[in-house]
Length: 219
Image 1 (cartoon, rainbow, N blue to C red):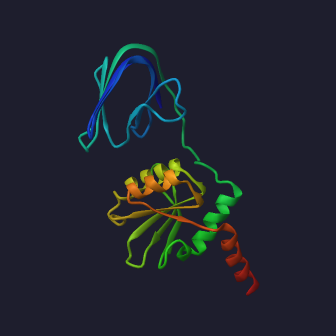
Image 2 (tube, one colour):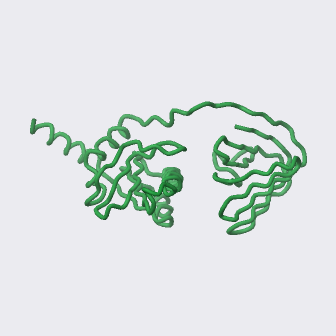
Image 3 (spheres, rainbow, N blue to C red):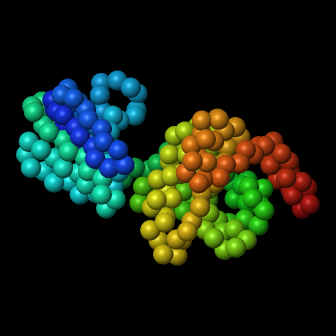
């Protein structure tokens, strides 16, 4: 990862136009090409960003980041205060807590509790930005990516959106749709999911455990 602290201005051109006036900011260039611009505050969310795939043209005092959608991010570096490269190495990914991991396992065994006719293809299906929890097929044979959380919030929808973008590039999965699953899904997360064509389902963990218990008593 390249970390640059600089006094800069930023201009975005794409679906809309946006301008960040001169200020000191942190510019992150990740190994996958993602560029994110942060202020000293505002928690995790960047002021502006460009997801991969993209092209970064480094002209010294000006960076131009563009992508195949025709979007462009122009960063004018007025004063560079720090410029460092760091090698992170492979990331093992987020480890789920016991309830969330068990919930994922139960849904993998009973995918039809998410949607009728859903069948499991694989758990932890890999993408180049991490594994999606469940890859399934619906009754029509369409691929379905399922992201499972104990508590459904906006960041979970964002995560599933990134997975869907990657999976859509696979010709065998093209046309894939997503379902966001959690015990409780916040209203804001529901609205965001629906705006992106992603389904959402709230599931009862105790009821799923009951299914498991009934099955165990048969043997």
